[in-house]
Each structure stands twice: as C-alpha cells, then as structure tokens.
Length: 177
Image 1 (cartoon, rainbow, N blue to C red):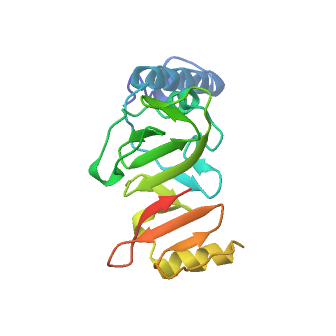
Image 2 (image 1 turned 135 degrees about the vertical axis):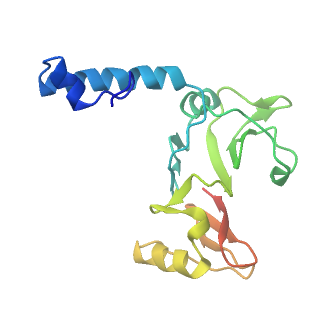
C-alpha cells in the first residue's frame, strides 16, 4: 500500500492518473521527503574519490560550501587529535582547510585535505572501506592505473591522490584524500 511519501502505481490507477502523472506525483513526494529530512543524518553510501573528495565534498570548496552539502552535525572524536583549528569535524571525518584562525577555518580558505576514519558509510571503488585489505586495495589501485606505493610504515599511498592505513588485522581503517 502506498504512503504519502511513497505512492504506488495502483494509487495512481485508482485516481485515473496516467503513468507520467504518477511519476510526477512520486517525484513531488520525494521532494517533500527530502525537505522534511534536510539536515538529518540519513545512511547512504559516501564514495571516496582519490585526489578529489568524499561523497559530495570536493577539494577546493570553502567551509560554507562543505557545510551546505554535508549536513551532518559537527562533532569531535578522540581519534582526531589536537590542533584542529583548520578543520571541520564530523563523525569519522575531518575536513582541513588551507587557512584558519583560533576559531576555525577562514571563510575564504579552501579544502585541501580530507581524513576518513572508520565510517561505515564510506566506500572505495564501490566497496565498504572496512572490507578492503592491504593486498586487495593495492591490487585494485594498480588495476585502475594508479601508481600505488607501500612505504616502510605499512601504508598504501598514491602520491597527491590517496593514503590508506590498516588495522592489526590488515583491514582498511584510515583514508586520506
């Protein structure tokens, strides 16, 4: 049975609406849903784009632009460390900017570094981050033409694109873009 937000085709047929009218109705309902849930955290896949960004966030954005496209509540977590005046902080995510003062990133500064830590909604090449191992991600990067290196610290790096760190069991837990 259709709901106010998700009408079903049978609802449209009962109302004698054409298929295209039903689609318009459904799209309007989807818009109402987006409006009603704006600013709330909704589980979704946030794809990591090496050298570019994470989900809707892209390098070069200003702080206000990041906040406009990424509407989660800001929060600090212990793993984040200190001296973070240059960053916007979210659950499992730090967005660093080129210029800051004692209160945070300056409005005209640009995003230049993203750190993703154990976010269950973070995906790399269509797969959840936590499912990647060092060997599998290294093979995938090389298959896609990235010049991936493995420095002595055990990480995987593609200079100026992506840095990857792993837990003691070899699973990916930390990504820098």
